[in-house]
Amino acid sequence: EIREEALGQQVCFWRRMRISRCFLFLVKKCGNIKPANWRNQHTYKMATSASANLSKIVKKNYMELPQDGKVQAMYIWIDGTGESVRCKTRTLDKEPKAVSDLPEWNFDGSSTYQSEGSNSDMYLIPSAMFRDPFRKDPNKLILCEVLKYNRKPAESNLRNSCQKIMAMVSDEHPWFGMEQEYTLLGTDGHPFGWPSNGFPGPQGPYYCGVGADKAYGRDIVEAHYRACLYAGIHLSGTNAEVMASQWEYQVGPCEGIHMGDHLWMSRFILHRVCEDFGIIASFDPKPIPGNWNGAGCHTNFSTKSMRDEGGLKFIEECIEKLGKRHQYHIRAYDPKGGLDNARRLTGHHETSNINEFSAGVANRGASIRIPRSVGQEKKGYFEDRRPSANCDPYAVTEALIRTCLLGEAGDKPIENNKN
Image (cartoon, rainbow, N blue to C red; front, side):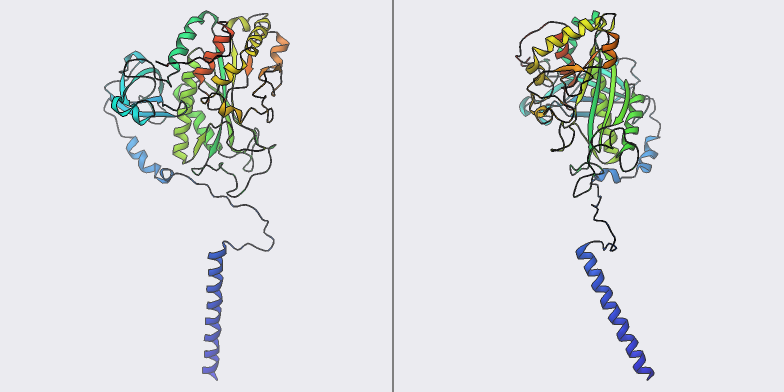
């Protein structure tokens, strides 16, 4: 009887084991088993880069080593796409105090869409210098212009012509402030924090939102903010935007050529911060099609005449001039001559229609918005809401000066650096 009972217990044991194995097999095949009252929520799994998994603690041990009086200078430039930045580092014997202390350098333009392999050497001309928030003082970030083999500006070097235009109107002290919107993505191109096989709730709670279900990626935003302040960039604020995983930061006010310098360096720093976190910052003007907001780079502009008493008169004159050159500005406001912005400027989601020029007080659906405070005080600035998130700030600011201050007319695009 005892043997039979023991045998019966063994049979029950192995029967339970077979049931358990069958259960595990089903779990592996079907995924996680949820309780009966489990709501059919989407799963969250973010694709990140392999570099994000490397130990930052180990890296820190090396980054704290003394530099023996040497300085690391990271040279940064805009590549042939007109949208992406490249960088490489050289060692200097002492800390540079001004841009004039920095040597020229060169690079292989055939690997950056800027030259042919048979004549690939291109020049890096230091143009603006910032503190390095990644390697820290005394190391530097150096924004460079790119010159071709014949010492003429590369096609993507729009800084060169912008600087000349700004010099022509220096007595008007043109000020700019640019609102850079961007979207955080996983390395698979899926928006950060979005369900892996679906969408978050509709727009509404995300703009300036607070809470884990409303703000996705705030650690990255805060890291970027602090890094820009350390670098010396005139970053004036930041906020969560209308679409989930979309953010904005504001750079300015900056005078003249400094607007483009500071915005480009802020973009570089954002890419580097995101690299550390293993995700991507996208400046695509319409990263998600459908009923979702796009990403722009609204540009605020004023001159001394606009800021003085009675400046509203000059603002209205500028708007009239801009209305006559709408297509010229549309072509200048994204690197693909308006094709990128066509996906964004639809007349919906707080945008104007790309084919129509409009202006209004406090109207975020217009091409040009006059802030309500400016309308009341009769002086100040206006906001051009047409530039795309991936615009070249040198092209945008130059176009505004050409139209508003130099009185250029006609919709024919300016062909920079075609030499």
